[in-house]
Image (cartoon, rainbow, N blue to C red; front, side, top):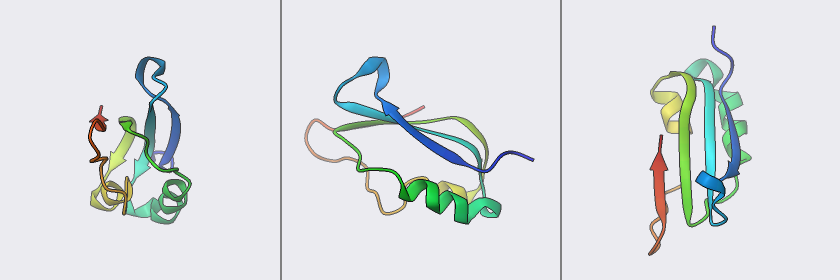
Length: 85
């Protein structure tokens, strides 16, 4: 069985000083919903540019996909960007 889902934050791609990267990994599934809620609640506000790195996600269902960024709209201010990888 895959490990419980997790999220880590770090600097943007190539050490960007304006953006950040949110890396998601493990199992983002209903079985881990309460732990995922806690992990996501610790995320700070997104800066002007954020990269969502899903490369370490082992399992994902619709519950996990919804918890990835609940209540956090994608950046929409002029010059902002959102990347997924």
